[in-house]
Each structure stands twice: as structure tokens, then as C-alpha cells.
Length: 385
Image (cartoon, rainbow, N blue to C red):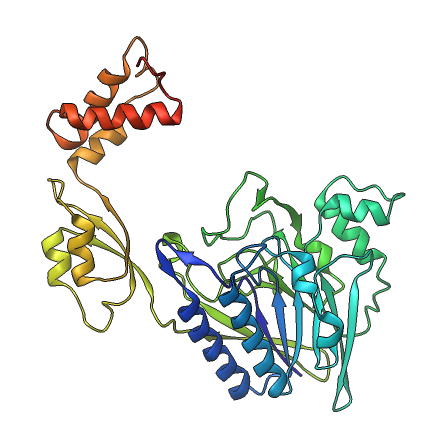
């Protein structure tokens, strides 16, 4: 039996000023092609279906189209909520969808949802744990000692009556750590000290009862602790730090003897995300028509600030997302000790020094007026400042 594992679709997401709906539609079409080519029996979608709790109309239409095509292909679909999703909105129509083999678990009701799939004499149990908070689990298990998110997840699993002799798959959405190591972050998740996107860290040992664990929340594809506890990663690159990531989807084969094999199938985006570096002249000369439509983060090494650099870059690379500089001026700024920089200094002095350090010239009075106005609106200085 074959399953394709997806996570972190973030339908409706933007990249800078650019809407990604067409890019997401392209990658979902590619995934549907993989499902057909690989003769996949079921799709496991591990949360963060939408990018926002209140998704756009375009994002809802895109999910509707994707699920409809899975139904028409006769593929069973198992989908849980992530921390970006609205539980109730994602749960809408779930009873109707079940009649078409689309199973949605987005609202935790105290139990670990389970579905049994039998095909050609083989049976697989698919468990679905939507994103939950420890407080929600404590509500259903008031006598259990639940202090951390790991305590909560262990309590839910221990009360699920899991048959360890059966073939078991779990779909979950949380920040799972490996053998003393945290997973490699994609960079677009949102990072805290002990959590990612406010999802507390738990150990992969929670999932020993499962033959395969389809995880969502981390955007870089990887196994955690053991290969069978795996993040599919996001299907598209959503931040500069993912520029060098190779996106893929795991196709998981469950053998008749319960053995699990994982095949990573590469994904090719409609527009890649690339980080390029050099002088403006070098970058313009290096333009390749085949990749000019990619999303571009550019680091300029020109010593002088270029007027309308973004406008010039977008003539060659129309989907330039961001430009920054790396030159002697920026290096000097990085090396400055600013721990006591504001002591006995006026706002005007501080801004003038910074402007002089970055641009190598004096700030004009008109520019200083703009800075003062912005500082007043931000509450940095008072009206008299």
C-alpha cells in the first residue's frame, strides 16, 4: 500500500509583494501527477493547509479543486489541522467529505481519530492528531499529569488503545526533536527558544507505536530520530533561508510484512527562489532568460548606493523580492559597538552619524525632517524632539 505525505501547503501565502496562488496551483498539479505515476492509495496532509486562520477565497478554491481531483482519482485523503489553520473552518463539511473518502480531523475531541484501510488483504490503521494545546488535552484528561506539550501528546497516544502488532500510521503537526538534536528549520516557520511558531518541542520517542509518522510544521524535508518519523516539508520555498533547499514529497510504501520504504520524489516549482550576489552590473550581465522569472533575493556588493536599485533589478528580474547590500559600509556598521551609542546623544546626532556611516555623506535637512516625523509617529521621540 502506498501513501504520499504532504505538509505545510500554506495555501494563500505571499512572498513579499507576490501572490503565490498560481505557484501553489502548479505544484499541486505536479503532486497530482506524482500520485498517478506512483499509483498512490492515500494522501496524508499534515496540517497548515492554509496560511491564515481566515483563508482567502482563492486559497479555498484551490483546496476545493485539489480535494475534488483526489476524489475523482479514487485516492483516500487524510487531513489534519495545523497551528495556522482555523479548526472549525477546516472541519466544515467533514461528515460529507467522508462519503468521498476525504477524512478531516481538525478539532480535538479527546480521542485520537483512527481510520482503517484494507486493500488486497493488507490493513493499515491511520491515526490523526490535529494541532492541539496542552490545555485542551488537560480538559479531557483532568487526572493526568500534563505539564508540557510532550505530556499531552503521550497522554493522547497512551489512551488510544493502539495495537502495536498492527501496521500504524500517525499524522501529526508539532515540533519534534530527534536524538538530542532539533530538526533543521526552513526559516519560514517562526522560531522561538523551545518552540517553533508557539508549538512546544516534543521527543520523537513519543511515536514508538507507529510504523510511519507523517509530520507537519517544519518546512525542511527530513527524518527526525528515525527515518520513519518524517517532515515532508513545505512544497514551495517560503523564505530566503530555504533558497538552497531541495523540495520533495515522500512516497511511503507499506509492505505486506509491515516493512516501510520511503522514496523522495523531487518537486519542480513554476518559479524557483534564488539568492544572487554581486555588483548590479554583474547581476544584470549574468541574467539567464530561463530563470529570469524566478523569485530573487539580491545582495549588491556595489560600494555606492544605487538610486532605484529595485526598479533597475526588476527590469532584468521582474520577481525581485528584496535587495540588500554587502560592502565596506555595511561591514563597518556590523563591527560598531553600539552598546552605549545612545548615551547623552540626541536623536539628530544618532541619525546623522548612522547616515554618514552607511552612505558616506551628510544627511540633508529634508531627509532629517522625514526621520523625525517617522520617529514621532513611532513614539521614539516626543513632539518637541
